[in-house]
Image (cartoon, rainbow, N blue to C red):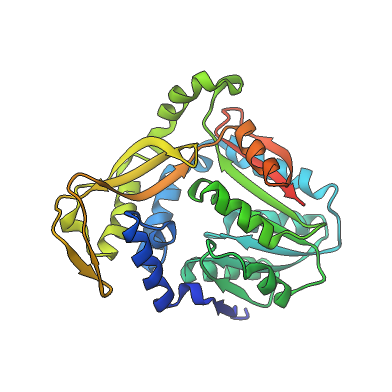
Length: 326
């Protein structure tokens, strides 16, 4: 099998990552990309996914992907497609989508895009082994998305794009998600996005607190906390912080699970040539995961000017998949 070719955007070069780390710590947070950048972190994330993602225990979660693939492709029927795994992770779901395309005699050129080189390589190799064409894949910070449209045009400008965005919506602020979608979507393209949901009965806001508590164990568990602790260790801050705690809060007015660690000390320290002055008891935000409701997610995207169509939702209302276009 051919060895995949990778591009590395400047956003994942050492100098850029250092600037991002400084800005992040100055804001008393760890940027989400620093949860995935090393091979150890990628492996710890994989263990969280295998142990706690409901897709492994509940066939409903697999059903909605298969259902969404069918419903998305019925009106989208070019013979060849540029399939883009945006935030590809291990590429498992992109492989399922490619298999679906093949069964309907569609050809696909595939590119994997993620912040982790290890995950991009795994995803690209997985789809190439299944028969997908491949030219280049990209290692980059999705938060810096202005360049993505130009890069995709450089790989292939004429084929219609079928873009996956699975598992990322919860870990990016709504404003960042909208900016990414604007960067990659052209008229005629389709983006498939999944979102973890707060399982609120009948979309009644009064049920939100209980719904959030019901899914908290998916985040407040030893595997997730160990994965997050690896980011604290990467920055050599473990002796300055209390253990990470997972709580329910909000990010940009969206319900969220927030993992944070309180500073033990107010002693100034230096990192990356900069001086930082923590405050005892203040939380350093290490992680967040948003939990929309179906109506809230659709409202946010329509407000940003996107066409949004619900393709499938689990009967437990914990996850849904949409088709998004411009």
